[in-house]
Image 1 (tube, rainbow, N blue to C red):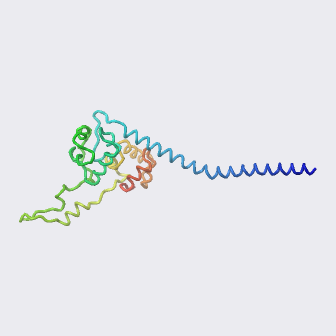
Image 2: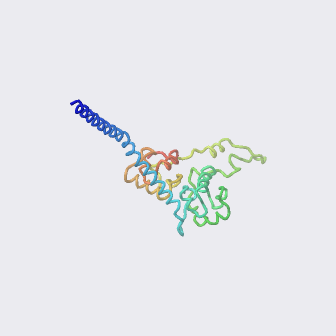
Image 3: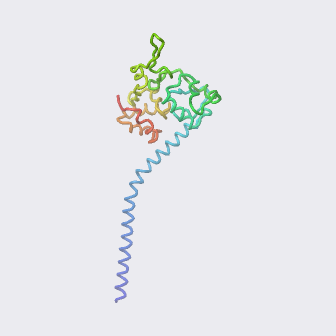
Length: 233
């Protein structure tokens, strides 16, 4: 009799243990799965963004295709023959800090571009459009300089201030044209068109974060242009 009682008690304890293990697994699942469900779309989006960017960078320039050196981003520059990711970054940085390129020879001031490289990329460069406002710079040595009647030179404070400290215009996401959007780093013709399509189809952008709804724009690209755009209009 006593043996049967012990057996029954053991069975009950075993059943309770199994039930507790099942409850613990359910709790772990509830704690982990929601994070996984929210994390997976973000990872997939970043993976798709990286894949699209790599595809755009590796696509060679087609015969007759040209790009605007003052509006193209790193991805477009990377497609030029003899231009890799490092030189593409240098092009964008030099354009931002030193002003726009008005002729092909201006690209020689960029580290990594010499006469041989310039000869390769010259056929693919288009300088027909006006220089974007934010890239205007006074020629070196002429900023704030004036000559008086005696031939002496002096610095004009007002002229210097207006030339050096001109505020950079930010791009209005809800009013920008196709060309203006391409002035943003990393935004080429394809992404500019998607931004316009999204604006037309889904309504105005209320904050820079709304750009994440555009396919091909992820956290990396958004971080690069966040300070250069405003949701005006």
